[in-house]
Image (cartoon, rainbow, N blue to C red; front, side, top):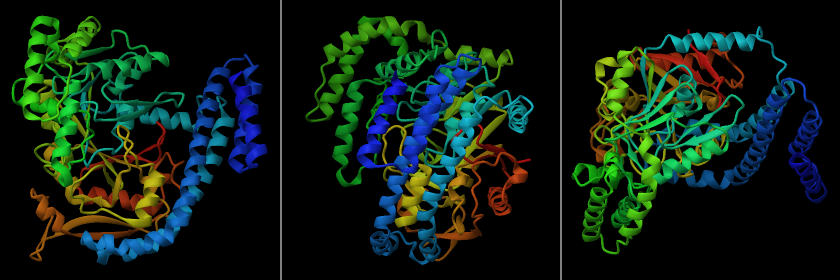
Amino acid sequence: QRIRLSLLLLLLRFVVFGITPTRFTLLILLLLRIYYSFNRREGTNRFSSKMTTATTTLATLATTTATTRVVSTNASRQKKQTTTAIGHHHHHHHRGGDVQNQSSVVLAVERRVRRRRRSLIVTVLAGSQSSSSSPTSARAAKSDDEWKKLGNVCAVLGSQWGDEGKGKLVDILAREYEVVCRCQGGANAGHTIYDDDGKKYALHLVPSGILNEKALCVVGNGVVVHLPGMFEELDALEKVGVDCAGRMIVSDRAHLLFELHKEVDGLREAELSGDKIGTTKRGIGPAYASKATRNGIRVGDIKNMDTFAEKLKTLAADAGKRFEGFEYDVDAEIQRYGKIRERILPFIADTVEIVNQAHADKKKILVEGANATMLDLDFGTYPFVTSSNPSLGGVCSGLGLAPNKFETVIGVAKAYTTRVGSGPYPTELFGDLADDLRAIGYEYGTTTGRPRRIGWLDMVALNFASKINGFTHLNITKLDCLSELDEIKIGVAYKLPDGTTTTAFPASIEELEKVEVVYETLPGWKSDISDVRDWKDMPENAKNYVKRVEELSGGVECRFIGVGPGRDAIVIKP
């Protein structure tokens, strides 16, 4: 009935707005879905799932096409504004190549949409026809073997300013690991993952291993936990058929995040006025502040509601003294948590003991980092940072797992860079090129929906992150988003105001804001690589780009190359 209703609505749109290629394609897909809805043979459900995913994706493509038209219409006006914006950030003399790229990238968005539509139709019509001996299956088997080679304890960490695409790699690896852990941050992190049918899930607190029925998901002691939000996430997963019962535990040492922390976060940001940090206003910073000032409340405290109530009243009174206009019904919150208590009790566990015992039993443990190294409280662009340590040190302290137990540390880096919120960003791009890369890569925050700032790959920052974390591998993501550029730049050094050049990342944001980036320019490959699954099929210039990043990183292996959003859209470099 839903399919028939969709068909009627689509036909109505034809009458009112006319037929476009996208609407015609949707009509064909809907007719196929109606046909197969009567087919009860084996494989029909899988086909129907693919059709659902295809229809959703086509709707997204239609939106992207509309966005592209807007970008194209405004292109000439934005070009006039570009020179002024660039000059303010000391990159004006590098802009010539960017202007040359602008018109080609605008047209490229439309070409990529058309290619994705054609590719999608082929994929859908193929349905479940592929055999186990197909080249695709062989490549999948090869990839599975590659994942099995990784160490028993593996950490996947962001190497830039977040949003690098960690969730995809974690999603793939979570199928191979028996314990999947979060170790720091809170609901300010957002990981987007997909199941085998292409269904999308946006996770914030729940570890990505939740889709692997055999995995135990662990929320470690370094995480700040908003229990109502966590249960909303679990309920949403259960509603779409993901069985979460008995598959997730929360550390008794993890600190609780309350509504008062969110209130304080907003008040604190308002105090900063023009110097706003650009937080997600999820209360993460204030929750960690409560932990540091030793008046925080831990998950294990909820076992004794009398003690819990006393501590929460003290915490609320402290916030009331600090912030004028602070309003918080502490009694209502105590009552709310009295109801939550019964539900959270089965989740509470000594995760330090459980994770270390799992290691002793030689179980495979995967740690998914949240945020990224350049937002690290100690090593990032302070104070425009997060409130925890997303680097390897934070992993160890956030799980209670010793550093010598980590065999594999994978740094995830986009082929370009993005950043959300305020703070210095040396390789930042502006104007049409930035807008078009944002549209191609769909660069909007998973948690906030904010448009991300766009920049070239910054090897000074990436190498700094690699030193801190000891990366054994790099996962380069979204390489396909650069496919239409005539030339691609990599930031390889910083020129300081005194004329000297450095490859060290400055601690001072004042100094960082004044640096002039030294770029290397590489030729683009000017061909779509989103269907490439084997390194030998990659265009030579795309290979050269990856190899150059590997050389500039001091030889850290760029082993995994992302060429699209799907689970299988990854190339393993031999």
